[in-house]
Length: 352
Image (cartoon, one colour):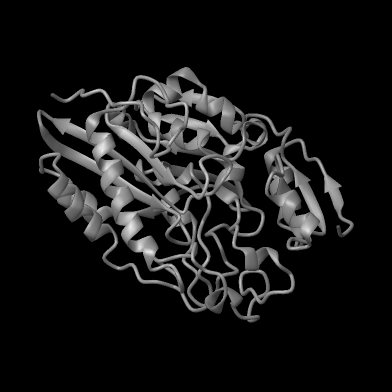
């Protein structure tokens, strides 16, 4: 591992000023960053430790009915918070489906948003990777790429974003609060992660020194708690990233869908919101034909980036299953196998 300076600021402005210097990186739990440093993929000159900054580790209910989650809140603490798990059940389910219990106890909300791709070519210093070294090329294009992107990719990069938590977050119109050199600003989570285009090394919309301080859910997000599910298909049921995942939620008026929310994971370089599919579901009855039509629309622009054509059909099927599960109702408790399609926990029909 390369030698680096270590700084522990006591205020957010101090942290932003330190991290704005070239070669700096923020350090919270380090569950992703330290692995990258050990492998030589990330080689910062300076680590700015934000773990002791005040005011970033709280969960606060807001006047509009929403919630504000500090960037340093631990994934496990958030998933097990009674109010949060009851109001945003598929967010809690997504959190509990990720990594191991030990990692969830350490990993933070802000770090989850900022985790980097798990593409094997990105981690392998002997491989060409435009994300790691701009202009080097992308060995994944002609390599082992069955798990790579089918939406939003470019010839420069076909990596996917690995987060589970971000998938239902983006479906609920989450907003990211950022402290930067020019002060506080906000950005929709949907706009935080960039598509690769010709510059895959620019992974987010953040500028040097920008620090995520919180994630906020609007009051409208609570309307979906009765019918919300996250479904994650992986190559093994535990401790694995999604091959394909889907977050689905409904707000019903009688037996008719008033609003639908749908997003996918494991298919693109960012959590993928399927807005056109949501629009088609609004006003429809919760039937398989409507769910299949929505799945076709959600994957209409999908195309293989290599040996992964199967992911397109797989994603459609996961979308249908997630929509079906959400329509059946949120379970009274989170399944023992969170987000697994093999879970036997039934839903509760709230809208009938």
